[in-house]
Amino acid sequence: MLEASFFKRDTRTVARELLGKYLYRRTPDGRLFRGIISETEAYHGPEDLACHCAKGKTPRTTVMFGPGGHIYVYLIYGMYEMLNFTTMDEGFPAAVLIRGLMHPEVWENGRFVPLDAKTDGPGKLTRAFEIDRSLNTRPLGDRTGLWVEDAGITPREVETTPRIGVDYAGEWKDKPWRYVIKKL
DNA sequence: TGCACGATCTCG
DNA sequence: GAGATCGTGCAT
Figure 1 (cartoon, chains in turn orange, blue, purple):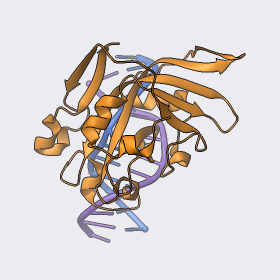
Figure 2 (cartoon, rainbow, N blue to C red):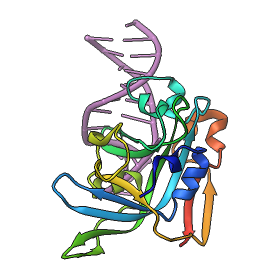
Figure 3 (cartoon, rainbow, N blue to C red):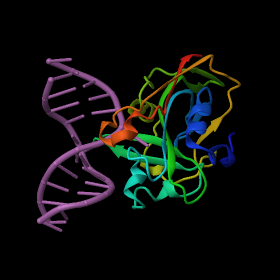
């Protein structure tokens, strides 16, 4: 299981290194899911106009000002929960948005079997893994029911692009802070 | 207290 | 290409 120290680093480094890791989810009713993180975005610092933290410390963004390794989940467009992990040390607001998973699986009869659900979008993966705002502000870990583990995978090819859906962010919209596995 | 809008997805 | 749908932040 990845410890908080993994997340208390530069957000772009964390976002890049999360690719190829397993995201594990244990639901309140006991079901276990996992999937390989395949797409992430970095939202780094109070200057980054694409980051919610650019608005300053508000009830919603407070968790991003806390230490790395915590969960930030928010509702967008009135119907989609977005999953983020906070990064950096206490006082520096930043987080990584988890935008996609590949090879989603569910634990059945003593083994992982393919999950029949799409997880190739930030709103889709939270729906498939039953991730919602009840997890907001909690630390990553097995007791929380959401954690990350090394999968022993090093992606062969990673693509870097500007972030999606942040055209309002002025010069910050062009920062190449989106990371995608092109070849696993 | 009201209002505009969003780190999206699905259907037509 | 547009509608669904509601919390958040900022104006009133």
